[in-house]
Amino acid sequence: MKALIIYPVIEDDRAGRAPLAFRAANMVTSYLAALFPDGVEVEVIDEYVEPMRYDIDADLVAISVLTPTAYYSYGIADRLRRQGHTVIAGGIHPSVFPEEAIQHFDAVVIGEGEETIPELVRDFQAGRLRKFYRAPGPANLENLPTPRWDLLKGRRYIIPRSVFATRGCPYRCSFCSIHLAQGRGFRKRPLRKVVEEIERIDTRRFLFWDDNLTADQRYAHDLFDAIAPLGKTWTSQTDFNVTQDETLLKTAKKSGCVGFFIGIESISEASLQGVRKFVNVVKKYREGIQRLHDNGLSLGAGMMVGFDSDGRDIFQQTLEFAHVVHMDAAYFKIVTPYPGTEAFAELERQGRILTRDWSRYQSHKHVVYRPALMEPEELKAGFHWMTREFYSVHSMARRLWGAHAGTGILGSLPVNIGHWLFYYFLDRHKGYNPAGGDLHEDRAGATA
Image 1 (spheres, one colour):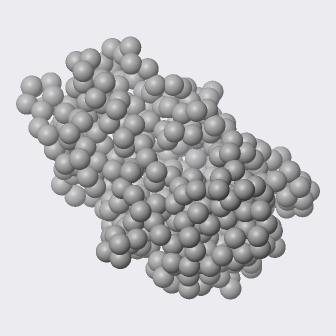
Image 2 (spheres, helix red, strand yellow; image 1 turned 90 degrees about the vertical axis):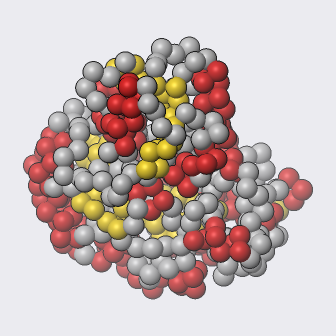
């Protein structure tokens, strides 16, 4: 039996606009491949590094579907089914809308796949494939298979390997979609299993594909101590609490950590409270970020604009804050209420959702709801103005010249150049500052 796993990407990335600096080896495809039983020959198409193709030799095709890739994925599935292939779907979007997805697939996996994928393959081989396979509950993380890194085109990734130590997040932010496929709560793999997996990595660099690696700080301490002798370098996503523990930061650095992606989200305390991001405290931001830098760790900050308390001055304020605290990189996003989240349900109840065209649910490009204190066009224009200002040549030069001693220019340059390329090619218009009238081009060019 032959199986093919497809990981589609959104429109801009298919156009070749996602630079190498954004590419990490895909944990979804390599781990999903490992769930297939012995005897199944598995191949992977990851559109981040290779184009989609339809001249395939596969009995069973699995597509990982996100909300912004849903319609594109449906088109892939429809075409492959017409060619005679059996096609199944998994991921967050089919888990939220299984009845929508089944119109285009032979079967839909709802929730985590550790138990359902092997069962689905057995049913397929026996000729009794069902329409829906729902995870019976949170997966047991004790004895997971080793990811199939051999299926990845490693030289096409800037970070060629990914592993995960934990799954989920203990917090309940209203905009977050993590729980839609993984369930609520926070789970940890046995330390010994994680360390053994990292020991098998055949490259020096890797990524922890965790949503909140240090949510359990005692576990994180033990993990970092255990991997320190391996001589690897790594990065991960985590929450702001990591900046409050000096010992944990030192241990992370000693273990090979080069920096963290942290969801700062907003510089407005009202916005953070409004979406239940209680772990973040604005008055602690500057001290926490400085503590990261003092320990030689860089910060990639996730920042969103468009919360209900955000006025037209939020773009200028966010930009100034990013410069003042010396963010090494900022991942700016427009607040996007993904279906299935509490944020989407509340905005829909208020009649503020502007579209259910899932292809527009791209947090770096479109506004899909009506903001409370500005027009959708102003939110999009302000977002583009802010990102282009932060990643202007002048801004990057100033940031790189002042790079902290821990990572230096070489540590910050790739991600800054990568973002510059991404935002430069992202859209035709440059936007404007809605608060200051800093018009870069005619406002008619900035539509949501």
